[in-house]
Amino acid sequence: MAEDFYSSEMQKDMAAFNSAITFLNRLNYWIYQSEVAYMTDDLITWRKSLNILYKEVECHFKEEEKKIIDDIITQLQPAYSKFLSFNNMNSITGNPIPSSITGTVGKLLNQLDLEIRRVIDRCGFLMPDKQDPRHLF
Image (cartoon, rainbow, N blue to C red; front, side):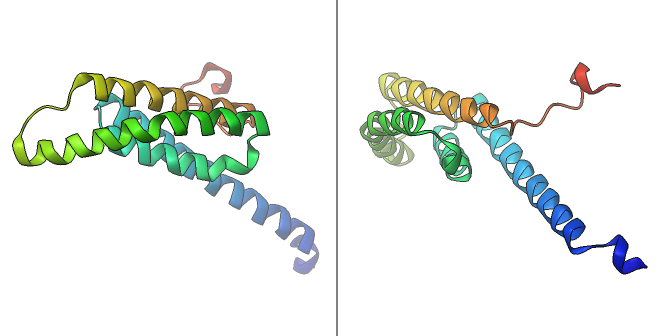
């Protein structure tokens, strides 16, 4: 009798649900990490968090969305390389990184962040906040 209750179809459904929850929790974690990095001006962590987010949802991007992301990444690469060079020198010399470089990198990371979040939202992967009024009842 217990075998009927836990049919293989139900087990498949439960496994799919559990996998989906794990996936959404990972997305939520990296979204949180990118927000913290943004708020603390940690451009390196912000970039890494966005790279991981992109890898998690890349298969859900439409071709035109991938092209937009690729264009942003192409623009970001030289500015980010300059930023890393200055960041390495800064750790040795203590000289500040020029705001023109940090500003450019921050602007491009923000564009990348927004594009990734658009796809995550379009796919319905954004988890609502517990305080969201739609979920109070």
